[in-house]
Length: 86
Image 1: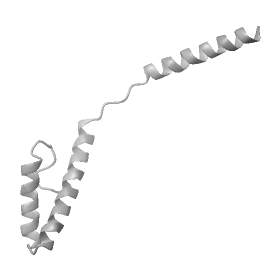
Image 2: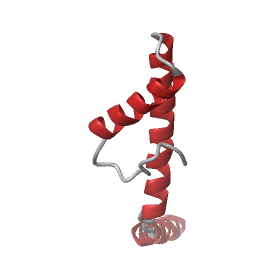
Image 3: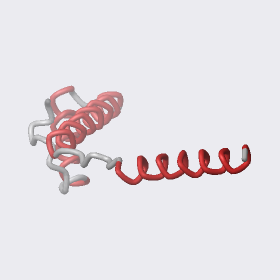
């Protein structure tokens, strides 16, 4: 009798656990989140590239302009804002 009860209890727990996993859905990311992530990536990339270019002797304005152009050339498929700032 105890074995039968334990088996029934185990089967019920597995059925409930399985249905809970099937019913939980992962929310789809919104386009606002994607745009924010892309803008952050762009800002960090341009800041890093600007630092690299200024280390080679370019002025800060020239370096930022070149970094922005390189980003647009390399990552034209992104929706990040065009001005390089958030």
